[in-house]
Image (tube, rainbow, N blue to C red; front, side):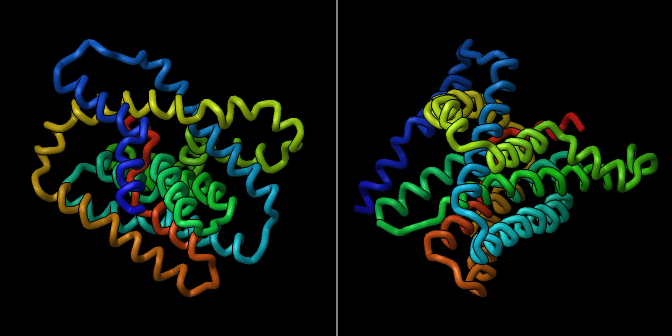
Length: 282
């Protein structure tokens, strides 16, 4: 059974398209996805994740466990970028440190899908509100990342106060899209929401596959830049996910939560962000 799950995950079309993107960049293919299309797909993925999370939260209602889970998710998404940033800033510039720190505080839709499939295969129940937790965790990580960049950027630090930083972070397109979609999903009429279900759900994995194709090409083109940082970023990338996951497991063990929900919370916390935030533009 475990081997079947491993093979199933390794042959996931989205992962294979990511590998195809890497191959395309390595062999210097002229394969290219228009930048406008990539931006649209990024916004679509944020919209879909946020809207589905809001719908799940609206259907399940707000229980004590759900409230605790969402609070833990928000806190971890805000705390992890903080200590990650100061570790990374020892070797990376402010912009790179902020972007990577935000990535480690946020989540991966691909990993969430794989983890939920694993739980279903093991017949372990998990709450639908975990989709909402995934959606909510996007915003704090981006906000903290942007605020840290603004705070420690020597060229901008003197001219910008905290109010401006918070406003700038909250008005970030990615944050606005996913939080707005989450709220719309909560308040939207269920029957009316069914009308856009083919767009929000049925084509999600297809768009995700195309997006990962682009991400594979981007990642391969940055291998040289990655190597230039030496062993520091490699060790950080290997150690931080299990550390963050253990932190999540420890905190969730202090409360009464279903095993499946604790598992997903631990999985969501340490993984790299799948949606590319353009923090270099701030």
